[in-house]
Length: 259
Image (cartoon, rainbow, N blue to C red):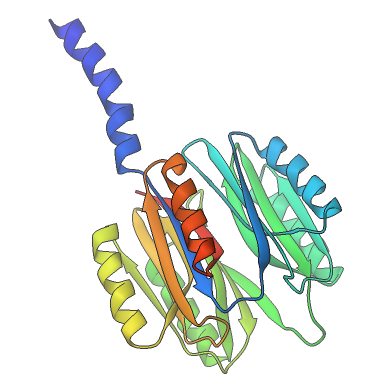
């Protein structure tokens, strides 16, 4: 009897975990992107090969995410990017050093993901005069304190990530974009925050699940006219929803995943 219960539990736990897992696709109307496409694969190496192929066809990669054994890459044309590159390293210290080299070469990072024991960063050539920086924090409260300090210095948040016990915030000099940072332990609670921020004129410009909480950066940006999102526990359920959004004039701006 005990063995049977153990077998049932062993089968049930992965099913419950998958049901709790969430993919969130954020869209915006008003961005310049066109001809969007995406790939979903279980391997970073496959995605890396696809990035190279898409570059040859005139696409740029605008977003990556890894979660629940899947890598997602979003591609688009008319991004305004001059040049792109990516960096993949297994250890944060190695990635950090490689990232600094890219910074010295005139690049900035636009997305960061971690999976398959790899840190993967997507870089683009930064525009003349752009100033950016990044910082890390061990705890969320420490992160918030550093974010507020960055805001006072005239920086805005580009993205926040949490990997291997480390919060990482990438910021850019921009004192003209009002921002707020919010978090919630459940998607249901975060959803209420999102709707409230929309009513206040904010858009969700970055979303990440880290240390058992959803963390969102909201910005009063003129880059978006309207915003929407779709949610599913399996990526296959998102295909038709994404196609519908594209027909409505929306473009994917960010993909996130969490619990």
